Amino acid sequence: MEKKVSASVVNRLPRYYRYLTDLLAAGVERISSKELSEKMHVTASQIRQDLNCFGGFGQQGYGYNVKLLQSEIAKILGLDRGYTAVLVGAGNMGRTFAINTKFESRGFRLVGIFDIDPKKIGTTLTKHTIMDYANIRAFIEEHHPAMAILAVPKQAMHNVAQELIDCGIRAFLNFSYTELSAAGENIAVENVHLSDSLMRLSYKLLENDQKNSEG
Amino acid sequence: MEKKVSASVVNRLPRYYRYLTDLLAAGVERISSKELSEKMHVTASQIRQDLNCFGGFGQQGYGYNVKLLQSEIAKILGLDRGYTAVLVGAGNMGRTFAINTKFESRGFRLVGIFDIDPKKIGTTLTKHTIMDYANIRAFIEEHHPAMAILAVPKQAMHNVAQELIDCGIRAFLNFSYTELSAAGENIAVENVHLSDSLMRLSYKLLENDQKNSEG
DNA sequence: TGGCTTGTGTTATAATTTTAACAGGGATTT
DNA sequence: AAATCCCTGTTAAAATTATAACACAAGCCA
Image (cartoon, rainbow over all chains, first blue to last red; front, top):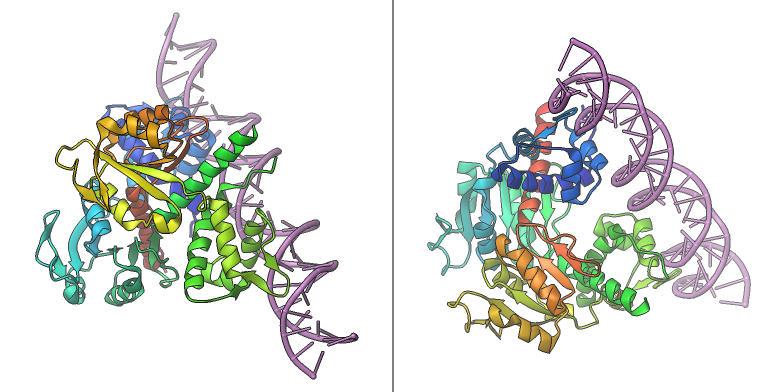
């Protein structure tokens, strides 16, 4: 068994991937760890270390082929798997996520959107007809989506998560205010808290303000 | 001058804050680092270390007073400053953020929403009438908001940021696909990328899947 | 009130993460 | 084709971060 890659490394990969995708679109063919590091504001050493957790994708004296590297990172991140997802909750957050995060261009496939609000059920969102949450179990058992995007109120979150785990969902992107943690042994979870980002920003702002009033 | 608190520590504070707020609402009066650590899935040592970067808020043999600790963390994060913010971009992301992230309950104040779309200008969003972005400079020079929430297309992001910096904005919460980095010496920036979270989730899912197919 | 327990703040140790250094394979140039 | 330069992969060192250990202040109970 290979040694586990640390979270710090994995956390940086999406950024590399996004930038490489931009480079690719701009027609750039090759890039060195030094150039990349300047754009990413990290050290060249770190880039090389990060990439070499997964294999040697570069060539001495040349650097990295942008197209190759981009597709290798895609593979590492599982973007070539065509993972399917259901969106639970078609409120503001759910709608934004469906519209904003171009699933297909990232290699994912959104296969169903669910809500409990009768006013929303039957309406359309990004080509999908919103379905009744009451029918989600049957849907999942038929289509076997891998992931669920949880954009439901915090009161409902844990129950929804548990029900979906029972149906076989094994990854959650959770937008609820409340943390989804320890969902189970092999359940992948990623929590997104917009208000946490706001508070972190606030801290940095305060820190700068204090630095300036001292200086 | 005090020694700089590391980003790792600051990143954990919002979570502590959220949980303490829940405890407070539930009427819990005191909590020990051990109890807290179990809920937060970190070690008790880490909790004590984190808090002691900012001062001793606990008492031996007793633990931490929930109300006091919550308000101390609020102070640390600058939530007692009444920082004001403008929202730039009233598309899906902007709307969601305005509605979803209860500014006021976090100690912030949203003072204006701007967009360039004539169809949106003049309409209402969370009690605010959406204003014409063309007038943002005058508005900022009059009201001096501290922060800006950027929910604009990536093509526009850098220009908008630069204009707002010129007007005196000193903190940005950026939702654009593109990174806002190196905005300037004393400019606080926090980038939020939903697609990065999705990719990280994908990695974890793939990792679990591979572990299982081996095992 | 005295002894015992609890749980902090802090110091010491361990682990992880980042940065630096460098040997050598390959590209590029003349 | 030889020589030079470039830039990776990798190993070593430094810095940071997390965990454990512990002394002692304060609560708690008899």
